[in-house]
Amino acid sequence: MINYFNDYANLCFEKFGDRVKHWITFSNPWAVAEKGYETGEHAPGLKLGGCGAYKAAHHIIKTHAKVWHSYNNTWRREQRGMVGISLTSGWGEPVDPHSPTDRDAAERYIQFHLGWFANPIYRGDYPEVMKNYVGRKSAQQGLGTSRLPSFSVQEKTYIKGTSDFLGIGHFTTRYVLQKNFPFLQVSSYHTDPDLAELVDPNWPAPGPKWLYSVPWGFRRLLNFIKTQYGNPLIYVTENGVSETLQCPQLCDEWRIQYLKGYINEILKALNDGVNVKGYTAWSLLDKFEWNKGFSERFGLYHIDFKHKNKPRYPKASVDYYKKIISANGFPNPREVENWHRKAMDSCSATHQHLAADSLITHMEMVTEIVLPTVFTLCILISIVLLIFYLRNHSS
Image (tube, rainbow, N blue to C red; front, side, top):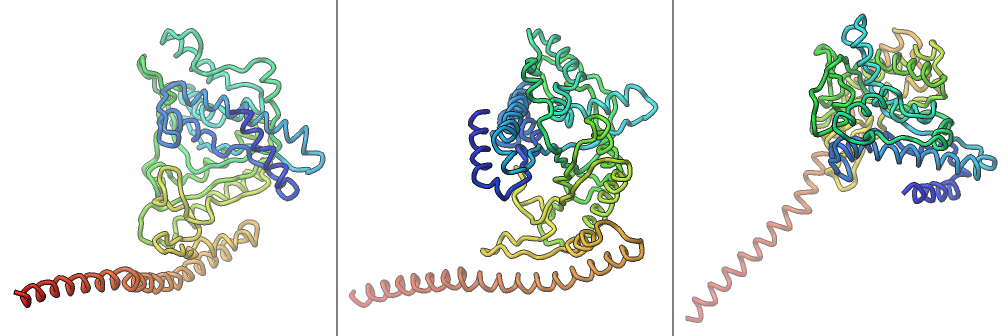
């Protein structure tokens, strides 16, 4: 599979490398491994508790390294592009920052999410705490080797340094504390790090249950990356908030506040010396979201999926985000407040447009579906009545 993926990547470099200068080998490999091979929530839907996710991640990391070397050896001199990976991770904050056990648990939270993939790429091997915890629990289960695969000396050297930039996806934060799980014969990635996750009930949660708005966690995550991995070049590839209600929500005040808070924390991280080069909000359009389908809407633009033409309507956050882009930040509080007011005004007009379009769509449905159906029923009833009439007449 590693070689197949490398063939695919080389085909992409060959066909598009003259125009595409930034390549991401894998986006959010944590979800691919954990959701696809541990819980089975995502494709391919396998529930290989305690070992499947680790094996999948192991092959993803080796595949990423092979693709990077292919580009470096064959294409870089001519195309002058960059190859990286995009990792999605929350921030783990200790419940009690003065407690060594809570601080260690928060560290494990980050290492079992971000470090799982970043550590091999930037430091040559899995985080020590991951190797220790999974290895110890594997031994308690009577396994001869750790459920976390190991890299050979040659593989460590081959993998280390294989990223020209680091893509970061970040959405939310958790409080973390130590939690010892009893010995379980059935292993699990989720019990391996011996920790529990908590949330502050005062944190805003406008969208799904897992996504709380905690902007300060992003600055801490970015500074952690700076310290742990030698301040790599960072592109924020995913950052945003969704809504789950099915009725159109164009005046998305919560998304405006989310974007304002998180982008402000990135600017603070820049002042801390973190090497953030670019930012992209997640996402431009409402779209297909993993196993949630079209029910979870992250888009700056609302999409009417029921309409055959899938029309798009700008939410209030579109106007606000445009202003952020134009200013490349936040000029002063008065001007930013003016952005907010204009954005909320714009969504009211869009709502009226959407309502009119919905009425037209409803009328089209009546014209295209209901009327032909009624017409067909009328013909059938006429035929039945004619048959009865002819029978009575003939008798």
